Amino acid sequence: MKQYKTDKIRNIGLVAHGGAGKTSLAEALLFNAKAIDRLGKVDEGTSTMDFDQEEIKRNISISAAVAPCEWKDCKINIVDTPGYFDFAGEVKGALRAVDTAVVLACAVSNVEVGTEKVWQYAEEAGLPKVL
Image (tube, rainbow, N blue to C red; front, side):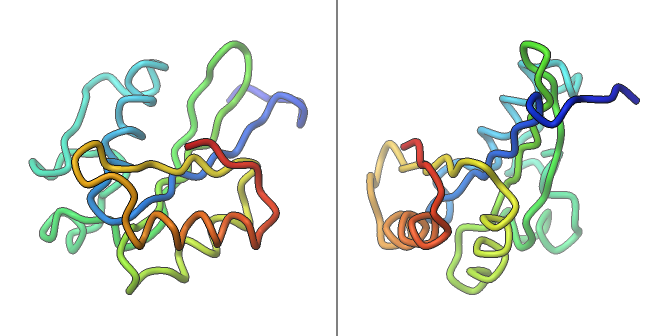
C-alpha cells in the first residue's frame, strides 16, 4: 500500500439531511478518482458506502463509512455519514475525525432542519465547511 506524508492526507466528511445525496456524491467521487470501477446506486443496493444489510434494505446510511481515494498525489478519506436524526451520534463522531465538513443541500427541497443541524455540529467541532 502506498504511504502518504501527513500533509498529503485529507479527511472530508459528507454531512446533510437524510436523502440529500451524500452517499451518491461519495460514490461519484470514488468512481471519478478511479478508486472503484463501477458507479453504484443507493436504490439498487450497490453503493460502496452502504454495505450493511439493514442499510441496503432501507436505502439509507445507518453508520458512518470511510473509503479512501487518491487525487493529485493526496490521499482523501471520504467519510459518508447518516442523515437522519436517529443516527446523529454517528455524524458527531465522524466530524471529530475529519478536517473539513462538506455540507450538502438537496437540489429539490433545499436547506432542511437536518442541514442546519449538521452545520451546527460542524461549527461546534470548529471545522471549516463547504456548502
